[in-house]
Image (cartoon, rainbow, N blue to C red; front, side, top):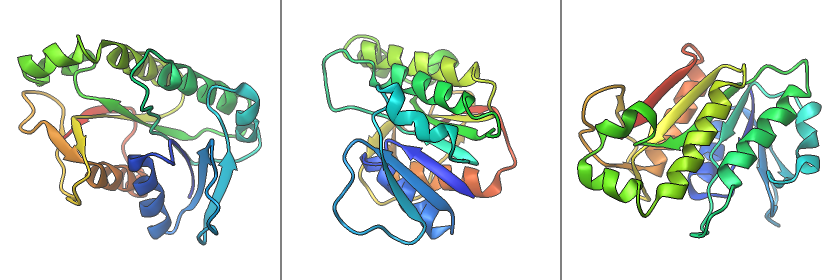
Length: 206
């Protein structure tokens, strides 16, 4: 399959790219700064800024079976990278009438009906210190849900850089763990792509 990954330069996005390549997919890694190293077999880099409509014009011609949105930012100040970026990606995809990809969005636990799946301490942090980020994720999710495309939304708990690949998908009830490795999240995304059976799912991953 043909996979396009936004946020491909991020710690989670990089692992999504690697796992998709290992599975034999063709991957477009969309990012602002393309690395100078040679590309791997099956991998194409496209310079793209999700905040600039014109740099997403390639989506109107490229055929993607799956589009992974793993946008993030290191900026602590208010920004709209996640929300506006996701909306711009969806609008660009709609310009291609021959393309009907499945969207996979990396969101955060605590959004929507998962608010009560995390502990009160985590809720306090999420809706005070991380309030803007949570609103960004909420806007992202609504954009994906309303897009008209098939989708999977993964609400991740605290991301770690451990090499663990085990994960649980929890739809209801308290989350048993408030951490998950980026490797596990990438593994889950790759498995969603490879199985390609379910659609329009929203679940927490821990």
